[in-house]
Length: 170
Image (cartoon, rainbow, N blue to C red):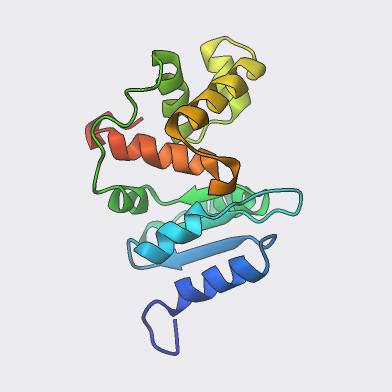
């Protein structure tokens, strides 16, 4: 993005995010990402006014229907991150970060990593949505994520992806 054709677009996205947190942001980039991308996706999102965020690679946005679906998620306050970007950002894995979670909590976190909603996770595990909310709260607490840390769901998923070998991701 001009004027310097370097990280100007990401820097602009972070400024917009800081000044107008209710505005959804979608970054289309040719680069896998760096510290700016990590900071953008770690910022709090959602809320009653929207404010979702996305980071997609230009060369992987080929299907209009998929692109429109991504825009819908962001407009609804959600997060869309290209899987290749997540892999790049998580290239340094912590080997045992999830050992403190119960088997069920790891299962819930794995389903969160695939983008499933709480309701969908509950249906798939044949439990109530309230039980899933409790599991997610336990996951956040055990991983040490506080509400002021930003989007705890994204941080938990990134922790899961970082601690899970690439061949074992959902």
